[in-house]
Length: 249
Image (cartoon, rainbow, N blue to C red; front, side, top):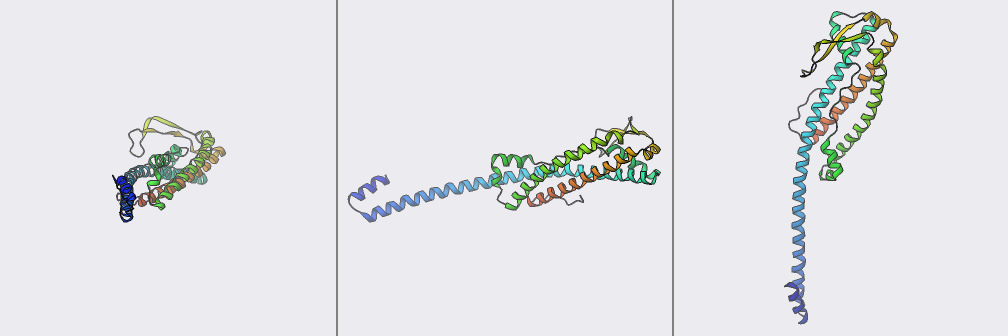
């Protein structure tokens, strides 16, 4: 209809009318474009809101998992320090027996945790990470993901060291499968430490060397777990998670 009017005006050289029709067409296109842009922006905001909420839930779960792992390695390191101290002094006092046995039980173990955000990895692979308008948040998430990559490489090396010393470390004690040791109040109790020969532990250089090395691996794990926990809490703050409760790492 507009085209017919333009042709008619052109034939009669009605330039003013032609100009007005041209303006009508241009403004119509601009308005349609603006409406489309506005709808796309609103959809983008909705998609971002959904993504951020999923990230909040994901990182809340990650923090719970990392906190458990951090607590475990702190306890394991404390136990390993008690073992090293007892070996150095050649004395195991009654009040040190429980943490000493905890060190025997957990000194060569690594507690895995849910560190990666599956939601963010999904967003990266699908290109939806661009929905996050907060550049600081986006960069922090990318840095966190890179840190987990580096951490896993370091953990592989650390775990190899643990495995190397497990045999020497477990030479002088056994497990009591008839007694349960409940840790973290879990529903699946594990075997308690059975009999052990403290005198032979003191005299066995391989055992002492293993204890020292395993103490350092637990120190390494704890440092990394604490670092991850701090990073996760920083991300939750940037996500504006109102349910974040400050706790001692």
